[in-house]
Image: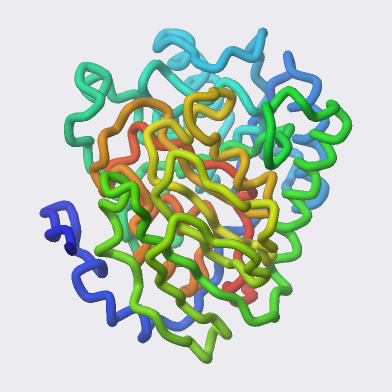
Amino acid sequence: MRPPCHAVLPVIACALGALFHATQAAAALKPAQLAIVINDADPDSVAMGEYYRKRRGIPATNVVHVSIPGKPRSIGVAQFRLLKQAIDSKLGPSIQAVLMVWTAPYAVQCNAITAAYTLGYDARQCAHTCAAGQPSAYFNSASKRPYTDHGLRPSMLLPTALPPIAGPPASLAPEQARQGAQALVERGVAAGARSLPASAYYLATSEVARNSRAGFFPPAGHLPAHRLTIRRMTADVLEGAHDVLVYQTGMAQVAKLETLAFVPGALADHLTSHGGDLLGSSQMSSLRWLAAGATASYGTVSEPCNHWQKFPNSAVLLRRYLGGDSAIEAYWKSVAWPAQGLFIGEPLAAPYAVASN
């Protein structure tokens, strides 16, 4: 059953057929517009931050150094406000987005740290996490300069270590985990040269409560201009696919990830309550998408209930990505109520962007 359109949507999701008439590809976020935040108390953050800066040609002046000892999974509101102030004080008006280079912290009480940084900490959401969220002005926006146009900077977390596809996160040797994070960066870089045909997979599963966004799955078909096939399935698992650009499903645990091959720049996420609890064990961590080969993902850090507005809208995400947005832009534009949502991965991946000066 298709969910009704909500007032927050001047929405493409009400006319999914518009996806087949996506606007001409535009330039994506540029490296010079991205700030990198490094935690000097975390050696992995320091090493990965410098690795990413060099690979993406980020100006050294765009690097912000902070100190968050102990790698806590969540930080308090007072500590977060000092952190945000420290970051913002170093950013000029040309900076349009922010990348935090660490695995933890990833939450500010019930808020995701990326959402709290971009939109401000939302205390009302924590009073009742299943309540409706505050709408994002950036949702489904055509803006290419979010800070200039909306006064907000989309943010993403670049993990410094990735777990194995199966098994507990701590079961991988530190050096292997770092290599996995570097491979993630390389997939983002490679996405700019992607030319192979690919598919976008959308699964309506037997976990009915987690199908709340299925009404927004794009219609099946082939998009010749993008060399992309959209495939809708009624199934609990995707197995053996070797051309995955998008994989969206609703499951607490997603099986058979080890059988898949993701193309550079792939986006993948599962609608469930605690995917954004990256180091938790109650449900599948969104980190596992990145470990399996995806380039960016999303998950909520606290119980959101199954409001589709708190998860990536499939039609909006695909249209914006095909229209030339980077991963950070497309993912952020696809979530209407993002307070509890954590955006992770390589932000500048943009398989369909056009070159710009």
